[in-house]
Length: 418
Image (tube, rainbow, N blue to C red; front, side, top):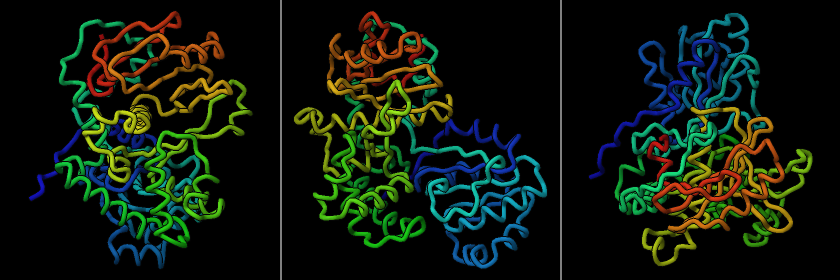
């Protein structure tokens, strides 16, 4: 019998309440089953809750979007609004007649802003918040303060090692991922949940966001992307492996991105115009789902550590993107790679201020591990604000003259502040 799904404090909740105080429409976007409905329903009884997964509600909304919106109470949550994108135009008309803050909360399991048939963007009327799968900090019921500490320069060398068990947690966290339903299950049952989740997503939800020609081909692409997570995106190469045309692969990549299965990390360059002609990296959003599809097990952490390398990189990217939601939503994320193949796994920017993060699965960190951060610091000059090599060890160590540090990966779920 499955264990009950525990409740977690979602660290994005404060931003949701803040947005409702001054914005007519707040849209909560994120993968299906990541906890959007649970968070939105905490607003009851002040807000009426309607789900567009309900067939009767869906039929009414599709047949008469304007009448549906007019019939809503003063404050309403509309769950899975991507199923009727035409509602956004009706909501715009309603909001233009009454700009009172906090009128509508929308949730969507597809990125509405990327949908080709979006009725209206609600520009100037809607704030979009992205709820990600549970972060490691939320799972550990921690403060989720690593990103803030990095941005504010509060990370300090600390030679006192963490408990030895801390490093053993890491592979288990990667394999569990961040979906509450999967985390609540033992590993074999979690894998079954991941497979069922993907099946439902591709067979039903994908058809809400695009005209899907072949769900089985999309599934094969998603499975291949799980094996390629953390690697440079080669659309032509993926097409050759799958026997699909480049245009078809590009369309299916768009669908996977709209469904929050993957994210593309664009390349950073000091000259912003050149960012557009470099190759992005492809990262799976949920490490647990990626591990299930790629066949990665806990035993691989010791016996075949290289299998975890790219998965670990994608997991760290996801942790920091998630923490940005409650730390600073204006941050932008990139990767860096130059013609000498010097790389930085994650480049974080706020305006011209720049930080770098490297990811290592090893238990030790050496000065050579900061080579990419030093190159980034040279390019940025005074705009470089700090860097971290995140590794599987237990102490925070000074790395080089740029001020970069070697930081335990466990700081992503433990409070790193001195």
